[in-house]
Image 1 (cartoon, rainbow, N blue to C red):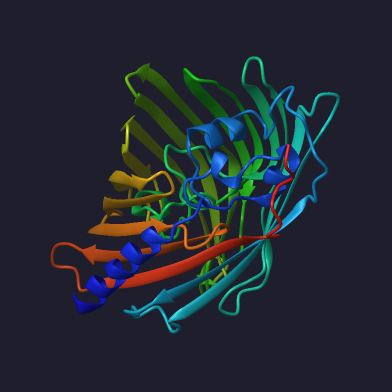
Image 2: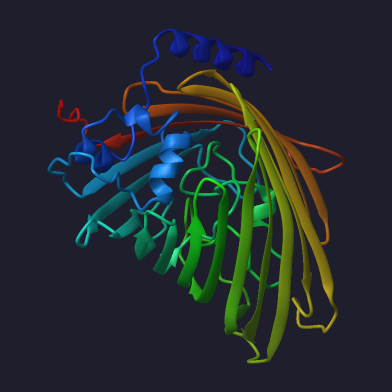
Length: 383
């Protein structure tokens, strides 16, 4: 526990020297506002930043400045306690981001995110979509490679180092989860009262997102039919949100060794809720799933997963939290994720995380830290 105490001492020092968090510099250049207008600690969004994202990255009638539509995000992660699947304590990742609005009133936009590769993985296009947003109603249409809309983001705006088990677990040979970007079309309506969305996917991202690529499995898989995802999240007042979601699809599998093939029809359902008031933020989700034939034997497999996160904002640009994760596919795994985040500089954030497995699992606790920053560093124009 000595390293944990010293790390939190470092956090206190950083809090004393804190500055507002940086953002994707493209938007700060475009509108001339501070990066901290949208972020707590980059890339975590505050309510204004989330509303800005939902409205297609535009502020109607606001003065615009010339922008450079490309930014770089870099993160260096240190893992003190290596697991059996890890071989490096340091893991660097570079991300190129590009976005711009176009159309008569900027109602169209595109967003692209390219991973430069990490731990020997090849570079790959992670997000690449274009969309149309009607700001007055919140209706939008999106086409390309995108993330599924969830109550807590498992990748792009993740507020910790480790993603939620409920979003990343897999069943048998089926790699269907909620964290992998999908290729298809997304339709929905987002405003202050509701967020209702429908996704139709024909394929998914196949690269290595944040580390060394996993060895190829015996079975190659593909979408046997379009995958459907639907979600609805409603704001009920008092900072409370409640919602439901569902995912259904079928995948085809072919053995690279014998050539044998089979098909797995799967479904996932879930409920979610969130509450925020003052410095506190709580959100939770519970998922249930069923695979008709995930391993080729013809036996149905049930799965489940869930999490609850409680987060406290020490200041406007820093926070600490704890997350309880659980997943069963069908073997069960549970853990606590303790973390704290501070903006080390105006364009960066520093994260410390302590992942503590529960029960009789042989998995050891893992202590990690991460420094993340975005460039260019120039200040936004003064109004």
